[in-house]
Figure (cartoon, rainbow, N blue to C red):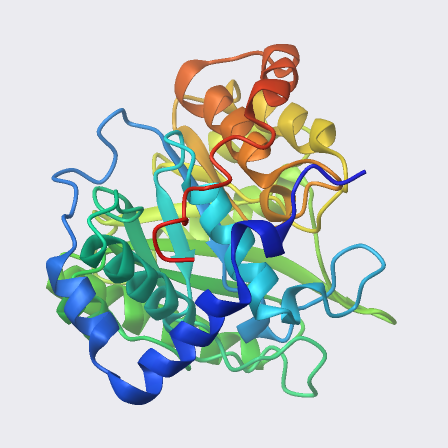
Length: 338
């Protein structure tokens, strides 16, 4: 039995209101962005637990056996907002369409006199990429979404960029150059950049990430040197055996990514606990599907568990035990606008 009902948390009426607002007041989300209270420091505790929600824009919608799970925008938004109920979540990384929906909902809450969800949270825009999953041009992968300049004028807190590299694919050089240019633009505007460098290889099932310590450490060294400065740069890297080798490859702060949902909270939480002890520069997580779609678990409970490991040094056993108290909590969080 599922511990979370997206339709109960996020009504069809609220979804319809979002579309009506887009039609009747297209600048509403922009106004909400200008009113949002930003946090003074990127990582006040030195650690970050950030939700990733940019998958549909990359042509990735499958979760488990459901090929279109992330294509259901109401369910997707409901899960994102559910995660943002957690005080142990520092913010969200998403494409602009998602961020605009969230900003509008925050504007609805503010207008209703209800507590907001985005004040003092990090909003990070995915610069996205044109190399759609499964396309014939997949590694010819320049930016197709927000720009560093748009992050700045929308008062966002950072930009995220995926950099996949296959040393046998010449198109990877174009993506490297585009990434360096984006990093330079972020540096000029003092916008933090969250770079996800992934070594990949082509198989009969498409490109897969090479999750070995050697491959990740080598590419981390390349990624750390991109652009005219690394002072605003964070790395987002997957877990592998021997993560200490990856951590030692750079002094930049590292956030763990999650990859495909395991449908069970335990495996990712164990990876997160292990990664956090691999080196002093492993500073948290930037995770999507494993938090948004934790099998039958409530996404809020999963977000709290991951945040407890990142911010409070919980053990995995403690994190798993904490979930019972979070399931079903604050299901009326959007009641003022639902």
